[in-house]
Amino acid sequence: MDTEKLGQSRFMNFIFKPAGASMESRLRRWLMPPKKTLLGADIRPGQVVLEVGCGSGFFTLPAAEMIGESGHLIAMDPLSVFVDRVARKVRDAGLNNVEVLRRDALHTKLEAASVDVALLFGVLPFPTLPLDRLLPEMHRVLKAGGTLAVWMFPVSFGVPNGILRSGLFTALGKRNGVYTYRRSEDAG
Ligand SMILES: C[S@@+](CC[C@H](N)C(=O)[O-])C[C@H]1O[C@@H](n2cnc3c(N)ncnc32)[C@H](O)[C@@H]1O
Image (cartoon, rainbow, N blue to C red; front, side, top):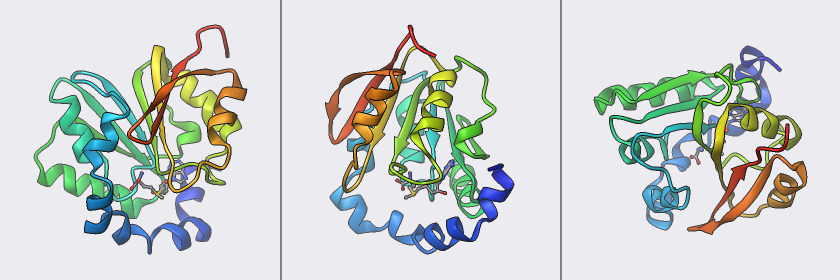
């Protein structure tokens, strides 16, 4: 599905628009400080990071802070309500290292081998991000040796096994609830 159709689909808007406020609630921040979770992805200053499904931006600003001014964060979501909200947050915070794109992550249109870390936080499992289509796109955009970082809540529904079965990534470990994988070089 193209971004336009996905962003306007009743299903997406029905599911996610009302969830916007709870995604940023104080309770969530308290239960799950975003920086602590991001530490599990091992993102570093100067890296290019792709955030798939940024939603209302719970992880966006903390991630931008962690990669610093020399880094570049691409926050991506098909819903304009979220893209507009995150773009506003980025502007208000005076950040120059974040690009907010309204786009379907199955077709990122990013250059091949251009991303150091792809964050899949709070987006799996979900029907609009089927692993058999998402993983090849993540493999394509990640640089050699790049990292796929996946945080799932509350249950993983077989996602970690699905990632390994794809043959596109190998497991690195799990920290602060975040599974990390290295891009396989002998695949795809
Ligand atoms: C549960 S929210 C999580 C938002 C954010 N990552 C967080 O943890 O607060 C899932 C997000 O994935 C986005 N999403 C769903 N399908 C997508 C797709 N095909 N490409 C990019 N984002 C998608 C939704 O619009 C929504 O913002």
